[in-house]
Length: 308
Ligand code: GLV
Image: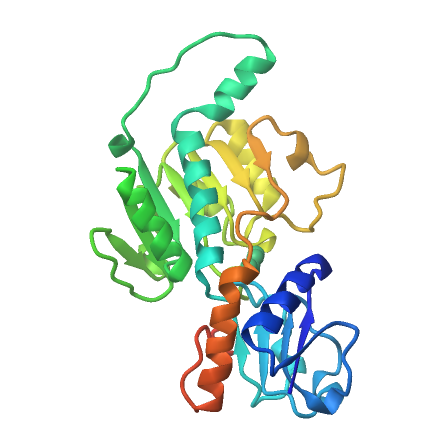
């Protein structure tokens, strides 16, 4: 049986070595070297190829190489084909690192100190304890939950919001549109970790910023299309928001003339917050193949109606 990898080629080599060690019976191939398309049972992609059902008539699982599946157009896929998003410890760990870095940077005024350094200004700001800062995480899936646990360990006052009700020990949670306002009003820093769907496109907009406390900050690690950039710039310029750390933009890469690049209160990173680590992800992928063969529920199976 053949497993095709169609994503970043350098990491494809690492995957190939791991498959050779851990699953030598699987014929692992890196796109476009697909061999006999009829033998292809598993395909892992960032962006799927066209005409999947015609090209691969015996495909059994479509894996996303990343945590998100918004880059996949479900309409073009056979209805019965299971689509699986990546849930694996390496990806979760890197997301935790990034969010902790971003929240701590804002909490300890690093953007201000960078701006001061540019002007050779030596000026200390008051150091606040973490438990004076409220950090709200939007999106309480695997990533959101683990991130909140780490933030709690740092002593931040944590809260969470999700589309449907979720319980997290020790963290007040809110859900649905009705409670979004009360959640936002308590977020000194808002971390966006929701999946991109039709209903979350443009969710980070003027209305949301106006419900946050004056001078609050944004850490955006969702998708570029969640954000209305003009509304963000307006909120930063008026002082409604203080800082924004953006790991995702629309489009990507961010064009050279985009005002976000040079805005003094914006830090942009090139979509690197979290990445699948083949060394740990291989076990999840092989476990899913095993589960599929034994008719058991898959880890990270996407609900197509929900969109994630
Ligand atoms: C990255 O953004 C991912 O979806 O894993």
